[in-house]
Image (cartoon, rainbow, N blue to C red; front, side, top):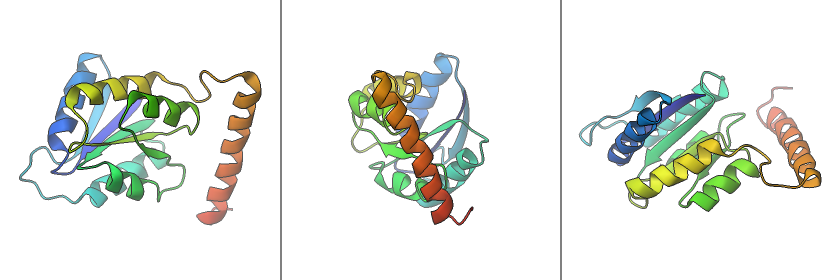
Length: 159
């Protein structure tokens, strides 16, 4: 799995912690955004860069960190094929993958501790779309993604 990780100055510390944790678990990570609190790259430029790369299939998934996770999520979701979710608990991370097929996880350093972030990331990375749902719901979820893709093509004028 190809994973991008990015942060602004408010999320750089948590990003570093998550990156170190994932490298320790043998994930291949590509780092974007700032590497210290002194750099002044706005969240929206980091989110835009990473979301474009996921949308273009350069990466399978991404993790974005800012102060709350909200700004990164809002901007990332402006790209076709991006389903960015702010997750503050492992349960939310699991459901964002199993129900919504999220491909970008956003976290907030003001809100989430390093230990909790690692738990959230673990659940998010190992949960597959439709996991844990019975067959009829799995079918409905897959169909919904097809319908959402059609809406996106219309919205982004890709038809």
